[in-house]
Amino acid sequence: MLCWNWLKEAIFPVRCIICKQEGKWLCSKHNHFCCAPENKANFAFLDEIFASTAYYDKTSKKLVEYFKFRGFSELADIMTVPMSSIIINNKLQEFTLIPIPLHWSRKLWRGFNQAEKLARSLQKQFPMMNLSTDLKRVQRTRQQAKLQRNDRLINVEQAFRWMGENVPQKILLIDDVVASGSTLNAAAKSLKQVGAKNVTGLVFARGGKPCQNLNNEN
Image: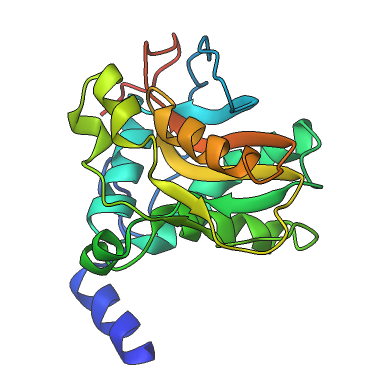
């Protein structure tokens, strides 16, 4: 592992993902996030969704790209800094962290579950919070980003199942990005069907209409 990390740093030295300045993934100029768009959706099973920033902010979108699609899982510790503020401000420390699961085939292809990386990073910051991976994705679904809203709802309707014994009463579902919220709501449905009382979502970024203070600097 140490050899791999050394090789990775030699081939891909740490540089700001926006301006390419060497030294940090986000330099001091770009290490900030805009506010998340307002959540106007109502869900049948999900009690609330908190998002720390807007997906269409330049910095946020780049972070998700490098983290989720280029395999830089260490970026989880950067992304969870604003997420941890939400936990503190909304007194969510008593909730159990549950990452949105990937189907085993997609996890094998990607190499890791990005939601689980975020959840484990949050647990490092909040050791008192339990973390469970007993929520499983039992159906391989199409990628939500490529579907229209109604198709997204159908796509994930029966995708999740609780495989543990006692379901936690207060659950904080963790994911990287939310658009329509259909994935989180489908997961919340499966959890409430087995006895969960409160299922809240916490994501790094929310899609939708950008807020006014987006970072558009080069």
